[in-house]
Amino acid sequence: MAGARHQNVMPGDVITTGPYRPEEHTVLDGKRILATAVGVSEIRDDSVRVVPLAGMYYPRVKDFVIGKVVSHTSLSWELEINSCYVGFLPASDVFGRDFSAHADDLTSHLAKGDMVAARVANFDRTRDPLLTVQDRDLGKIDIGELASLAPGKVPHLIGKNGSTIRAIEESCRATLAVGDNGWVVITADDPDGLLKAERAVRMIDEGAHEAGISERVRSMLETG
Amino acid sequence: MGGRDTDVVLLDENGVRCDGRRIDQTRRVEIRAGVLRNAHGSAYIEFGDNKILAGVFGPRDVHPKHMSDTDTGILRCRYHMSPFSVTERKNPAPSRREIEISKVIKEALEPSLMLEKFPRTVVDVFMEVLQADGGSRCAALSAASVALADAGIPMRDMVCACAAGKVADTIVLDVNNEEDQAGQADMPVGYMPNMDRITLIQLDGVLTPDEYKRCVRTAVDGCRQVYEVQKKALADRFFGGGGKEGSGDGA
Image (tube, rainbow over all chains, first blue to last red; front, side, top):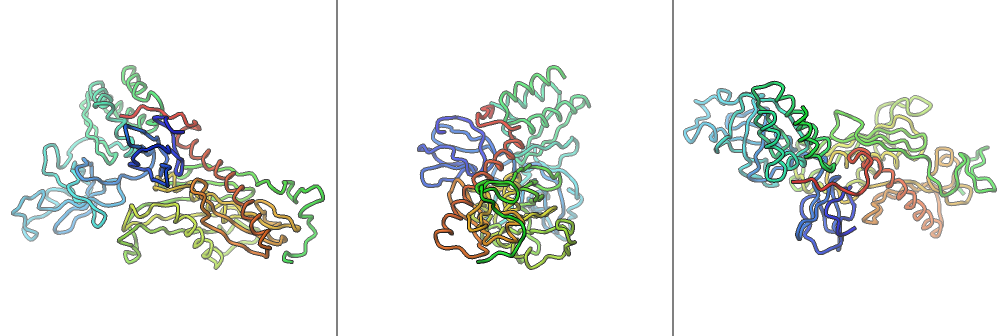
């Protein structure tokens, strides 16, 4: 089994017994490296990982995420980020240092149901992920269509050096904000372009593990 | 020793059982993964005449909050028999037996799951028996494991389950309802095939130490057969039935 660069795996499958470092979605059992999720295994340089085809988003610091406001307290918003944990966006991050819980109304900036582009500022096992919008291109999303795909398939949507997403954006004359949590906001002037971009995202979600998916998406974009 | 009086010939002189199987043969097993849209993961199993649906939610917030564990995620399992799953209407309230089976299935799945990766969360597994025919806990456990894999919950290995037992003084694989009622022993076994670990073992009946060992070995052989069906169900769901070749189209 060892030696294959990519293979379809299921939980418990032995990926390799070679001297590799077990990374995401793998576990070391004696000398064997086992897969812990259904997906495609990758042996790269000295490490082994599995790109899962199912499962929720697990936050990591510096990840770019698309979130949806689900509720707020007097000090912060809670954002659904397609994860088992809710994202936590402090009010001071939006209002600035002179934020006052008495004087400022949180709903004046972000109300329930609003979409937000944010970055994970901090996250560990003990508390929910802390989000920030203090960076370029972050903050409330006013327009766009929300699409989603499995978080593990986000690299397939982006493609090698961003080739796939660039092809989609150019062909559909659309802009795609791709969250690492698998949520994608598509904006386009032309409704046909929007639908085409949505179809491309759905194609990648359904067939990311199949050989030549990038080429098939490109041919779909060309033929319409 | 053991077993009720019955007119049914459980094992004839040719080694053929009451339903026509050989002693080392399981009933027909079929599993489909991803059958429910609203659950995060799901599976449907037909194990002989057993028909069971399993649905998984999570990891998600724990309610009630006091049940949450800051060190690890927790697992909750509910095995339930529908009122129409047996010949006499079954009261839908959880019975003593269902509570026991929920508990043993939870404990059989736990070693396979890596819930320590999701502290303060819960994974809920619901198993609904639509039709029961003996060995439903093994069938439910096998379906639950496929549903958990379908939901993408990290797991060290799959858990497959099959029973063995003693019928007419012979160790047989996968006892059915008649054999369970009239046989001498029934032993459900849950097994992690790649880790080679048993996660569930129960025994109803009396066996000698030698029979016990043979019974475990027989059940584990059955588990391996169920494992192949589980793998096929997941391959059909995620790889369109494709084999091991992989793709290599990643970024």
